[in-house]
Amino acid sequence: MPAHSDPNTDQNTDRSAAPALLRPRLQAFLSETFGLAPAAVADAAPLFSSGALDSHNMIELLVFLEEATGFRPGWAEVSLENLDSVGQILAWAARRAAAR
Image (cartoon, rainbow, N blue to C red; front, side, top):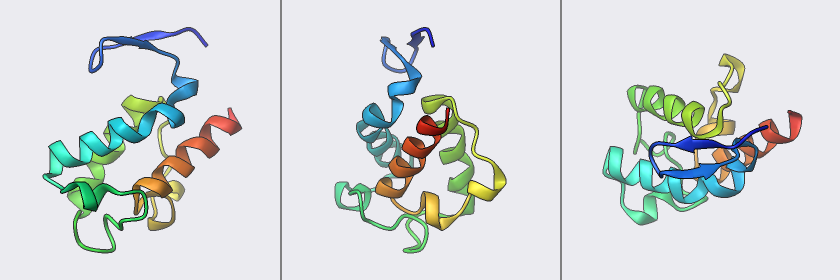
C-alpha cells in the first residue's frame, strides 16, 4: 500500500504500520479532545466503563480511528471488549491490520 501524507502530522505514513504508530496519536487525541489526564489514557485505564467517556465521545473516537488507521469499525466491533482502553483499541487495530 502506498504511503500517504497525513495532514495532522505532516509526515508520510503507511497506514499498515498504524497500530505501532497509533499509541501516541491516540493518547494525544483522547487528552486533547476529551480533556483526559495522562493516567486516564494509560493502556489499561478504562475509558467508557469508568464513565470517563460516553456514547457521544464514542462517535468522535470512531471517526478518529478510521482516519488514523484506514479501518472503518463494523458495528459488531464497537464494543467495550475492543474500545474500552487504549490497550484494547491498539489490539483491535493490530487484529484489523493483520487481517488485511
